Length: 188
Image 1: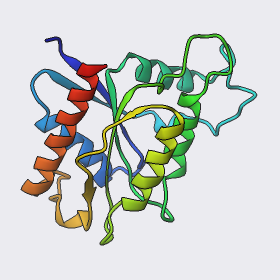
Image 2: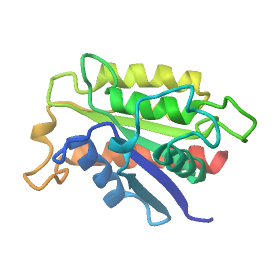
Image 3: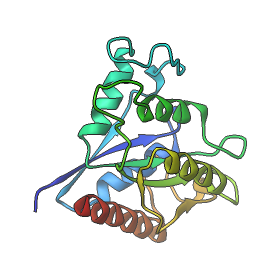
Image 4: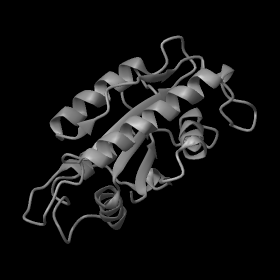
């Protein structure tokens, strides 16, 4: 079988983000035939503007995000939780990647396999943010991985000072989530 390429997006802009570290753990523990590329351009995506959301007018950072999603075999998202929901920068990027107001051939997220996980320092982790994100992906008609749920609560207990995931149970869940995303991508 051919190798798969997943685009990984962290909903956090923080340098020491546990969600970005969770994506690095997914890279480290992914099967050998899976490449996970972490997207680092979230900060460059401007606020969504429907007037600009047409071919030839989209900002370069948006064109790049849409291209990378379209070329990926699947998308892996790690989201923190802000105010019981999705971080604005992540929702904004999804808004740019979900539309097709023209005949330019596409909505990059349409039927795209997507897996969601998240880390937060609270006792509930990113439960509410993941639920809200799943609703967004219902609208985009993405192919969501529903199990396992990877909800890293009290995240500060599961990473070392270098940002390495050290909790064996969480490592196993991340591996299982990537395996489920592989299964979806191979069946598409």
